[in-house]
Image 1 (tube, rainbow, N blue to C red):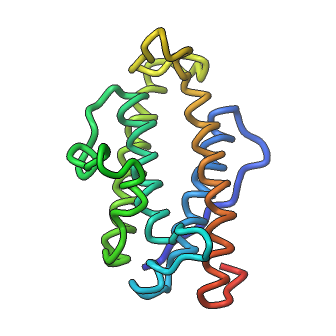
Image 2: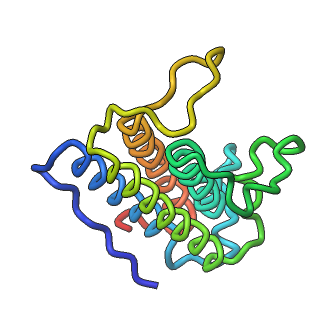
Length: 178
């Protein structure tokens, strides 16, 4: 599997800049997991129970949650639609145990593809990133997110987990320049 990590842009409009950082971090996470065995993807860095495999599944869920569910107001896609959330609120992390790398990477790649389609469709309605997402929050839960907030949040989500991925990967095989 070959994963190209696109560089971030230095000059772009707001949405283009955010997308370039998001694409860069998406590839960074996938690269951190590349080249490892399935068993290595299940290996945590104690005392944390985070694994690179779990990170791939979690980020696939987060992609679908923010871009498909909130931005495009779609119902959850498999496997999130039937996940036992009541039994395990961190199921998105734990569902990866024992799953092959190819399956987890494909889950994330498919979620990214759906997310890009949802974002393109939202931006086709108008380029204003300050526009609210399609699925509003109930009034008792506060403000509804905007397209801008979703993009910034996703950059933050990936950047935070990229730091975790660096540490986990180095603990597995010593790699520091993935």
